[in-house]
Length: 163
Image (cartoon, rainbow, N blue to C red; front, side, top):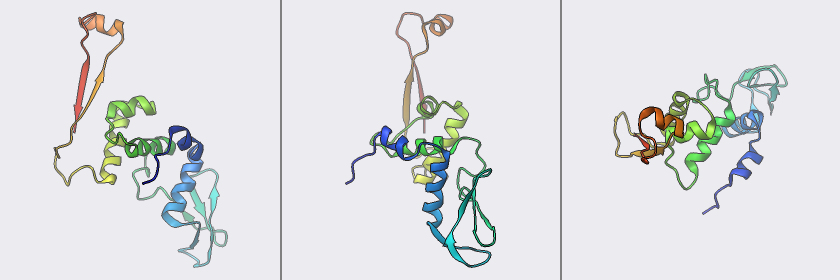
């Protein structure tokens, strides 16, 4: 069994979106591929302004994010990769609230990323609303928030459950 990658090692390997896109291109297509348009074998070069690669011979574009959960997402690719990293660490079960905190995104975005990652990892069942896996996440608000809700000083916290 391989040793888990630390957070530091993760960010050294994927320091930005360009490194993530390069990894995605190599994973999906390989370093050297046959161009679907002209048929020549070679390495595709990165296009600077869009997340795509082009054939050196004919200029045909390949979009590595096409057909993936990242395709129409405005969330940076590095955040998607970090979410996948969190799901593959020994803890494995990551709630949307935890993703929201770790990725610094809205809850809606965190929920979508978590749902897509679970779907592609095969954790979510085939159309079942509840597949037997439940996640809980405790969160205590600030003292000011607790005072406004009437729970100041009595140790109450909010627990969010998700499937």
